[in-house]
Length: 194
Picture 1 (cartoon, one colour):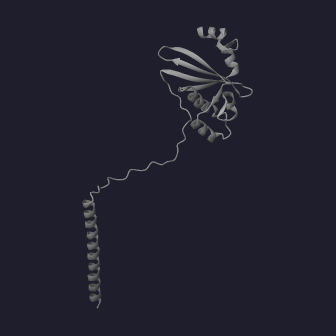
Picture 2: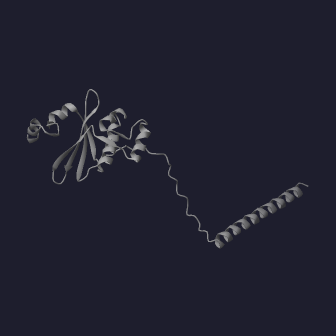
Picture 3: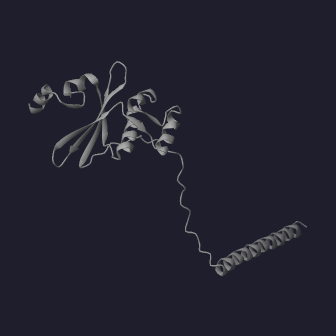
């Protein structure tokens, strides 16, 4: 009786395996027929999807060009206000420098796209304002970066890098003539010649 039970179990087990193999073969053959009839190409493998986590990038990045443009911020040490704005243009091949002054009290109008970006940082920022008013809207650690973006848009140039200096240093380098334009002071010219 034990042998009959073992034999019965073995036969049913083999029948089950045969049926599973038949169903597996029918599935594989059906798959091959459908793929062949509809000309569906086999996939070579899945490429990994890049994560869409935004990377923290600096607001501005310094660059070195044939013509290097340095935006110089002249800040009042006591109040932290923007007093003067200069663009120092250095022609690397000719080895010559030019300075362009931008009055800090210049009234500017931001483009709609830049205005939208800046309102994300400080919602109360107006679209029309003076350059000197920017210090009231941004933190000290990012004000220069945002000012660079604004000046780049206003003048349609790319600023290579920026420098912030105190007003006391600026006063030793430049002299105002008739309150209309600034020139190098005589002391600073002597310093450059030495």
